[in-house]
Image (cartoon, rainbow, N blue to C red; front, side, top):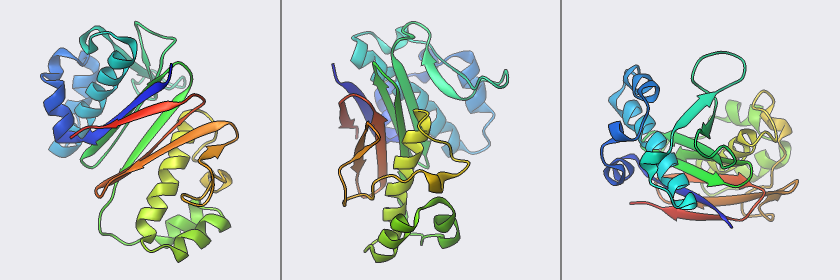
Amino acid sequence: MAGLALAGPTGAVLAAAGDVRELLTRTELDRAGALRSAADRDDFLAAHALVRLCAGRLLGRPAQSLTVVQSCGSCERPHGRPRLVEAPATAVSLAHARGWVAAAAADGPVGVDVEAVDGTDVDWRTAEAVCTAKELAALRSATHPRRAFLRQWVRKESLVKVGAGTLDEPARLDVPVYGQEPPRWHGWRLLDWGCAQAVGCVAAREEMRLRLLG
């Protein structure tokens, strides 16, 4: 069975989720409440609701029946890779970025990332620090360098989330340049998606289905 990924604007996801207080744990609600920005709080709540909706659709279970917990393995703080208490064999991932959220669920390792697209220019100092020479050449020749950079970034981030690399040295993640090579990397499938406002990527071993909300 193919895995499932969902993505959409924060507002559309919150509308589809209903009362998030019925979905999220007290820990998650407290984490959201500690964020200073209302927009950041909404993004957090939407992402944590969406990962339940996504997993619920994959498993054929109500989202309300699924509990999401997070741990990093290095401390007792509730952050890091998420997992489902009731279905530990099902892997899940979530992401949020300035008004957009994404989630994925699969039988095997899965990682998802999303980035909002705005009118800002590429920070070339950052690009040089995180991209390979091949990626930089593609960015410099791209019609929209900022969007092209985000395309590469979400690929790298999704691979980091499945444990295929780290962001300590992202330039060592020599991922395919978007639009030039097959979307595979050392056995990982890369499912890209995008619209005018955002771009994203899902990394998994298995085939993934994607649905955009809103």
